[in-house]
Length: 152
Image (spheres, rainbow, N blue to C red):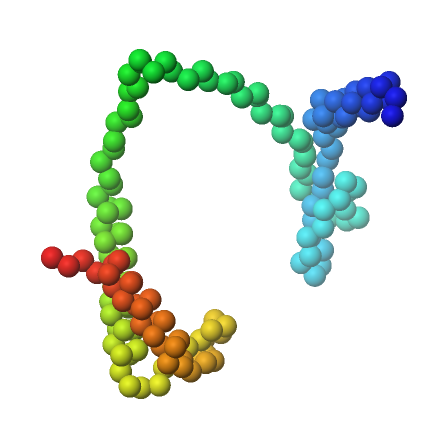
């Protein structure tokens, strides 16, 4: 490929990128009698339409490279903010709920009763756990209890 051809393609691409915001156009949207929303660059046949101008956002500015600080310069650490008390309380309540659920599930798994689970999420039990699956679920519930239940 000749260099002049590559240069022409590069210049065309650059022109498209630079001038694309200048080619913003009107876009019309409307709902028909069936409630279907339509979008078009032409006005709707009848009725009112909402117009929107669509533009391409400008390219972000180039990222400046930051020079690393010399090893002898002390680096200031950002101040650590105190946690929000409301957030701490909400997380504690969530962990308490998860703890209770895991404890209840573990009791069911450790009982000799048959355990069925909803694997496809439709709200109906699909599969009865076999011994291997019951052991895996028991281990999962024990890990959940260890992670969520606070022991003093």
